[in-house]
Length: 186
Ligand code: URA
Image 1 (cartoon, helix red, strand yellow):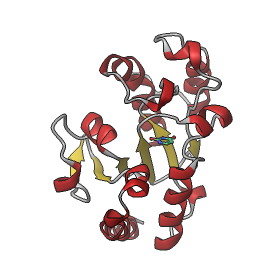
Image 2 (cartoon, helix red, strand yellow; image 1 turned 90 degrees about the vertical axis):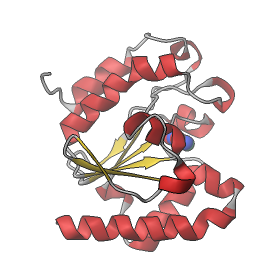
Image 3 (tube, rainbow, N blue to C red; image 1 turned 135 degrees about the vertical axis):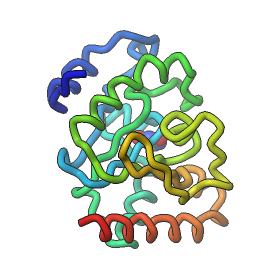
């Protein structure tokens, strides 16, 4: 597959009408951050604030993600953040498998354009799509997988931490391990 630039992929996404979500979106939420990032985060799908702004992880979950990045000394400017779906599912329902199937090619192209060394899936839905269909977030968060030469792991989705703060210590431990892995690379 010929590698497109992020600008080219974004332009295509912004015109996308492959699924019904194009009818209800305010903005396509393509992705944001450093185009040469070593670390890329992949979330699930935009929520209301992301749909309104066109930027991933700007709502409550995003603010919590920012706190973890700060806590371990990773700057949000140095990473790239995108989602499996580029458009908001109504009422924040889970993405449908057919929506993921139609949208995932854009993410694949983003990964090829950025070529991060480390990919971190935010939550179960992202991990089941990127790592393996039977991924179990409670048992396997923080575990490293090799996916086509990329080092990939999953952490709890920040929205899950807002619902269940008892997971916060595990999240911090995972984020520290991610920072150590990055430091080991660069
Ligand atoms: N949750 C996600 O998975 N992605 C966002 O962009 C915002 C919230």
